[in-house]
Image (cartoon, rainbow, N blue to C red; front, side):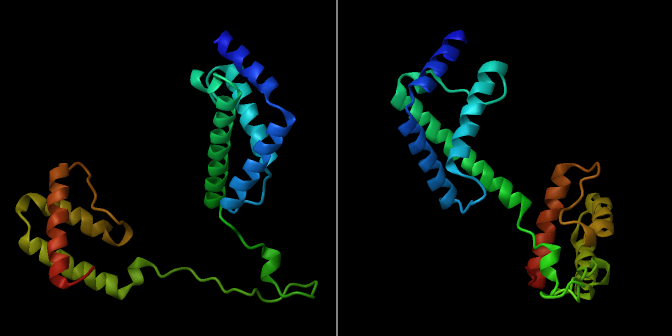
Length: 197
């Protein structure tokens, strides 16, 4: 471990300012490709170097270069570019998870200090209990399932019917998985017979 620490520190010292700038430009390019404008390439380089140094100190968390990544400066630069790509991809995933939200200030009409009616009207989606088509499907589906299903599936059918409107899967609730698989196959046959997709 001491040898790896010394090798990493040596290679970090051997990377020139121009190479660091090139890594920053590479980071800018990756961010642009991922449509991320909230950071700069140099920020990615700093995150990668910080992560490597953290791994050297703490041993567990952070980025751990392999021995072949530490063979020489070109190998180390390839490793750094790969780490920059990884950090940029992680930033893109974080942004996708957070999503883009419209500011509440943007919902109001411009020019007035006192807010007027919002530009958008928000409505709650219809409750599954109020959806007549879904209720009709439930009635027909479970009538036909009960008519065609073997007795061993009846308790599972009852359980599923109770949860049907509020779940997208057949409950297991203590039944054997093979029962759920059999019920799923039977439900598929029934739905195909109803021409419902």
